[in-house]
Amino acid sequence: MAFHLSSEAQREAFEAKIGYRFKDAVLLSTAFTHCSAVQNGGEGPGHNQRLEFLGDAVLEMCISEHLYLGFPEMPEGRLTKLRAGIVSEGALAAAAGKLSLGAHLVIGRGEELTGGREKPSILADAFEALIGAVYLDGGLNSARRFVLRFLGDQITEAIEAGGIRDFKTELQEAAHRAGLGECSYRTACETGPDHRKEFVVQVLIGGEVRGEGGGQSKKAAEQQAARAALMRLHL
Image (tube, rainbow, N blue to C red; front, side):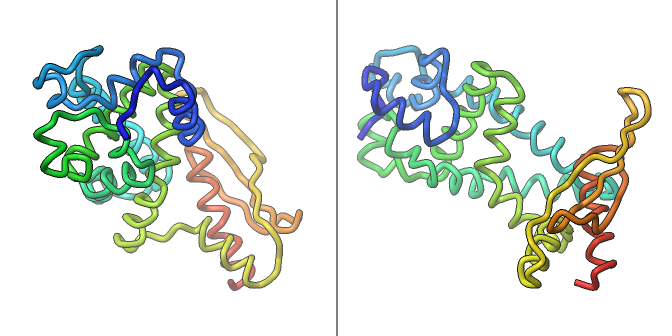
């Protein structure tokens, strides 16, 4: 079943799935239009290669920022390797598969006959084009939320494969096993100028402060607070 902009119900269902409603529906239609459809005489607003180009850059920025802030002590080389695993063709194709992007693509007859809807390269490109469309329509914050939501599994897998500890996840799982309750985080202190902030964050388990940590971002401070709680509670 191909994506058609005229199908309002189908578009709204997809937007509900991704948690974002487009103001400019043409961007969404373009993101799903493979170049083979246009080359074969397809009509419409054009194909998705330019959106893919933009989405690739936005994706790398969002993942780079996420890793930079989340792992403040990690050297550049490891950050680069970790990012490469998250934004690989296979990882993006897997994310596209979870959204059933292949079923919505507008592709040419030749690609249709050769299984284009399931080709990892086409799926990965469509996913990047969708990121580009969200970015143009809703800005960087919307694109960031989309990327982190739908590449969350790939981020976790890359972190685990790289032997990197995610103290927040460890703490939540350990607290659950021990029956201590849910973990929550609050900012206890924020100092410094805008370009060089320092944060102190406390982690609460069952409403009780169990650890505290600091960092140049809230995410980094939360990781340190979780590590302190793990050590304090011997979990």
